[in-house]
Amino acid sequence: MMTRVVCILALAATIGGCGRVGIFKSDEPVFDGQRFRAVVKAERKNRQVFTVTVHQVSKSVEGARAAANYKAKQHCIQYFGTSEIDWTVAPDADAQTLRVVDDTLTFRGSCRDEAA
Image 1 (cartoon, rainbow, N blue to C red):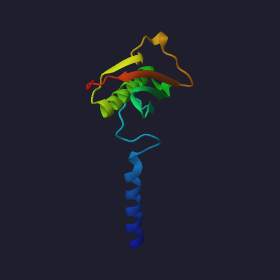
Image 2: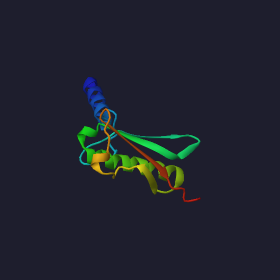
Image 3: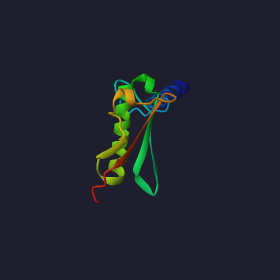
Image 4: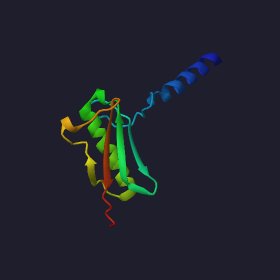
């Protein structure tokens, strides 16, 4: 009897951890039906200027564009309190101008500093 209770508790604990599968959290947004790993990089001394890369673009180019835009806006809101971005290489650029390298898209932008 005690073994059965322990097994049920262990199973419940295991299932509870299933929300996180692979590198994605269960609450991460979905773009065009897919989850993307998007990363924003900026220098610590100047977080205003950044690059955002999106991996596994082959799943959906449109989804990858949306994921890049989302991640960039998160970055700008966090550091500058605004979602306004001046893009040098934008997610909404013409499809022919996008360069996919190793199944990855890279965009560049600058957060507008509302305090300035």
